[in-house]
Length: 496
Image (cartoon, rainbow, N blue to C red; front, side, top):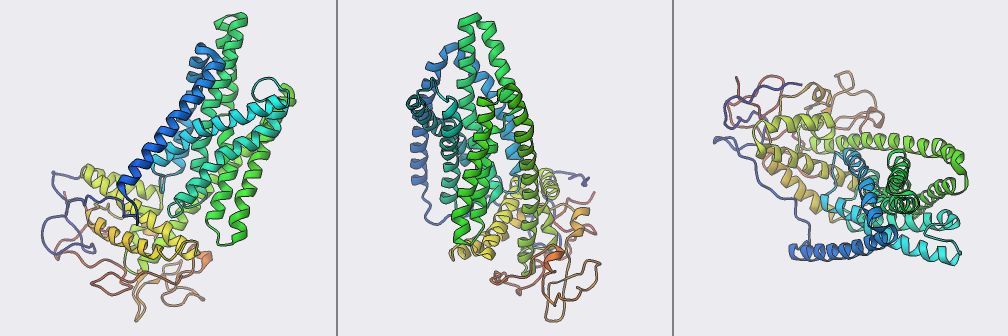
């Protein structure tokens, strides 16, 4: 898709249909922070952050000290190098999955550090103690690896996802968020564990046949763990994350308690099967388990995650059309928020006007996406009545942000958005699939039937904006005599 050149430097002019005050220059991007969270205190947050950082630092020093003592200096160094190689690509893939409402960086780092330091530290102490009691040499003997390590490690990893879901219950939106955190804690756990395994192989072979043999052995293990199966720990923990994500989105008390337990048990079972194939099945059995267990599970998880992300976009669109009906958004806004292509188009166009415009566009998308998720929780009745105050704050912020965003001309993919036409006493009636009036079963002012892609109207819609009637399908008109190019909606780049 191409856009008109921004031309000479200067602010673009607003078009009719935008929420602007009459006269005056094009408003500069508003510098707005995130919407306020009731009870949040900056000093308290800084103090909590410092405490968490200190705890992670101590745990990191302890676990790395244990690993270095077990592997030796040379083994620790090479183990660190090999373990780090798959970390960045795996993290990048999980962040790519979470593109509609990216999780805050501080929580991503928290999950990574929890997996690398806290979960591994707990697992290594418990696994070592059990191995000694079972009279097995070293950490992770056969019986310990199959019957002890899976439940211990999956509990240590899954607990942080549950913790984040409880602490961030207003922002934790479901399965996709859970999968992202599962990926982060799994990557962190695998990173530290791999240092131990690579370092031990290097140290053992180096003592027997020299450093070259140790390096070859560590590299061979890296191919197995870092290249063939880098997603093992994130994959197992994903089952727990799915269970927690299902619980977050359901009202049923039974489902909310049972789903995380079922997910955890599935994670333990998959982890135990994988460890058993490595411990008891020999080389051929291990390859068979990899092809028949790991590969199918991984493919299914990838397909499931992509389907969930697609449904996430559909949900965002459906909930934003609730606000279109009552005049907080115009229909053409929705594809620029609910589709990845539209989100990219809005940001690319905003980038033409400078960094502030791009920041405003990103903030507008984030604000509207957060509003859609909140709306979905209100409709599902899985959030308390305080959500209405948060909804009002988000709507006010959305209205303040919108005039600062340089929207592109309406692209082809936005033309497919349902268009709203006024009817006597019923503004906002959706058109039918063929562009005409709705078919049977769709009354005036109602939403299309569920099979048409959007849910029926739900109670509890926000009131209209002050200054114009509720149900008005667009913002108040902009300054007279300033029109955008035909077929689009403003503001637009200046005419060439």
